[in-house]
Image 1 (cartoon, rainbow over the protein chains, first blue to last red):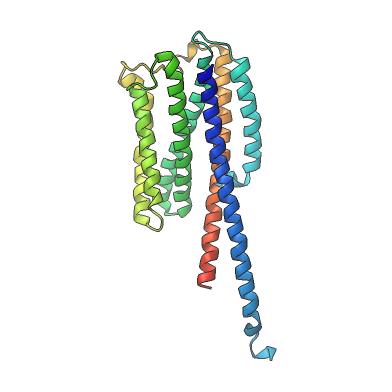
Image 2 (cartoon, rainbow over the protein chains, first blue to last red):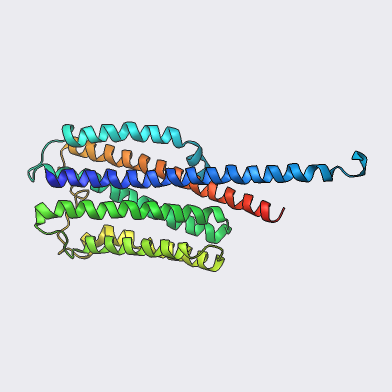
Amino acid sequence: MTYLFVAYAIVWIGIFAYSYSLGRQAQRLREQIEALEAALGSRQETAAPGAGGPGEA
Amino acid sequence: MLRVLVRAQKAVGLSALVLVTVSLYMVFVYAPREATGDVQRIFYYHVATAWNGYLFIAMVALSGLLYLVRKDEAWDAAGRTAAELGVLFISLTLILGSLWARPIWNVWWTWDPRLVTTLILWFIYVAYLLIQAGAEGSPRLKRFAAVFGIVGFLDIPLIHYSVVLWPRGIHPSVLRESGGMPFPMLLTMIVSVIAMTLLGLYLWGRRLEVEELKQRVQRLKEQLLWP
């Protein structure tokens, strides 16, 4: 019975560990995407006043 | 096809959860106790993880072939991610086999042809992952990895036919003798295999999503550096 318990425990620990690592990676990447998009957005905003050209003057 | 897997993640995951619960009930309650005792119940997930290992290794080979033909990076990513799952499931197969062998054969490991060819398969795809880890930005290494992944797949028929090629091996060939397997045991094995396959596909979908996110981060970084 011990071998049976250990066998199924290893299967589920292995699968959950892999699944958890995927979740962590996805979370970290989503945070990175948010930060990068915010940086891109703020750069476009700062570039916008100058991009108006002569018509804006 | 791969995009469908990423989008249908929740549905696949939910189906896997239901079927895994059913399979565990069948393994521990429904399936009859065999002559060798309860330890035989390891067999159901041993077969299911082995099947998944073969399935994902087949995906590596197929993705490699498509990458060589179409030169599409998406197929390279598909192969790389499938190999991760292939190695995970083959590792579980070897561990489960060892945990079954200890009380039945009185050894953790024996140099049986099927065990050795399976261990070789594990080494091949660990090597494949190492090649892929160093292949970032190198199409030549990616092509090499693709060929390596295709050639490595040839070990699977060798594992399957090792029982015939080397008849002195002691690994039981349960599927070949399935005529003698009672119906509840056969049904439990089939349900376990389907449950694990769905779980494997769910994990692959999540792994492919991580790959998509990595590519998005890369594109955004490039936009920031070179607007």
